[in-house]
Length: 187
Picture 1 (tube, one colour):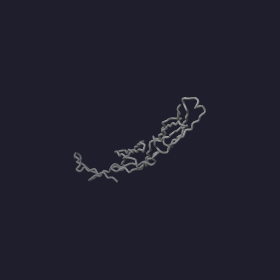
Picture 2 (cartoon, helix red, strand yellow; picture 1 turned 90 degrees about the horizontal axis):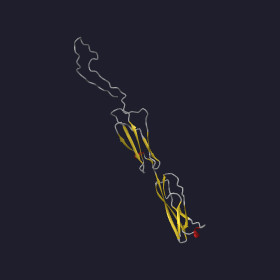
Picture 3 (spheres, helix red, strand yellow; picture 1 turned 180 degrees about the vertical axis):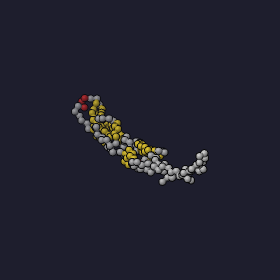
Picture 4 (cartoon, one colour; picture 1 turned 45 degrees about the vertical axis):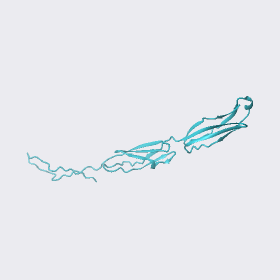
């Protein structure tokens, strides 16, 4: 004769952070003889708490006891965070960078369903014409977004001539440029 403990549901459970946990319970009965088991209800004590609001591994203990017989089982519940954080870029429509000047950050925020605000954890990689923003949460989930930098120079170059703007040459004379100076003026 033995006292058997049967868990209802899975022995190993993986739940996403914030998902509800429903205790499935367990039942106990004697095996090996029909005389003892008929109509005998054996209570099962359950100990343990599963907090789906915190990532971690939890154990729920089940104990069945009747006179000199005792049996125990454990259910393991792992609460995980598999949802990646999210980065949002602030953008100013029509903005651009004049060549030779530095890009002025328009702003960004990063949030995670478990860790909350991750803005200060964002890593920026600046390349010539883009910036790559990357962030990871405490569970190793990542997000990456890219900002294209628009370079534009709205001011056309100015050419200044030295000397007269009108030159008169007699037929057969050759024109020679004495000074070749190109002056670009930026505002």
